[in-house]
Length: 102
Image (cartoon, rainbow, N blue to C red; front, side, top):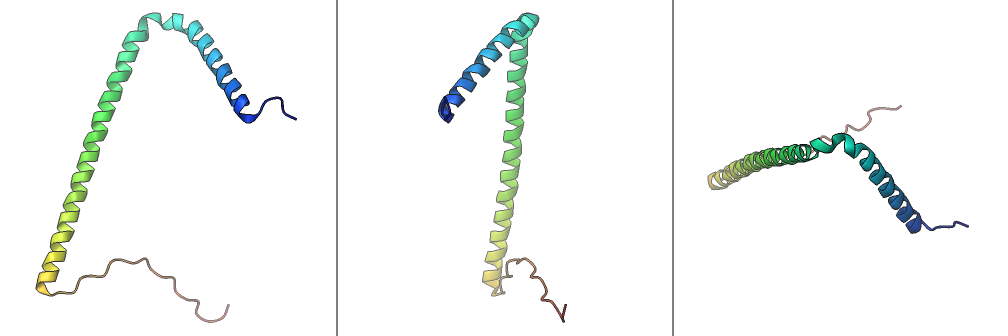
């Protein structure tokens, strides 16, 4: 029979980790006392730059996708107007059946 159930164990582990982290920060914090604010600012600045670059990359990808969709639609409309048969969508290759005995 267990003394604590899973939820209580998780809470106790969380508290222990928090106490340990607080002790570690208190001990190591004095060594980095003057660097805290500049380090935090640099971290935030890096995060903003990374976010902006990600947003730009997403916009480029979205624009490329929209261009491809527009190109496919125009090809489909041209084929429908010209009476040409629409090309079949690509299907994955099927494996060849075994020929002969094993």
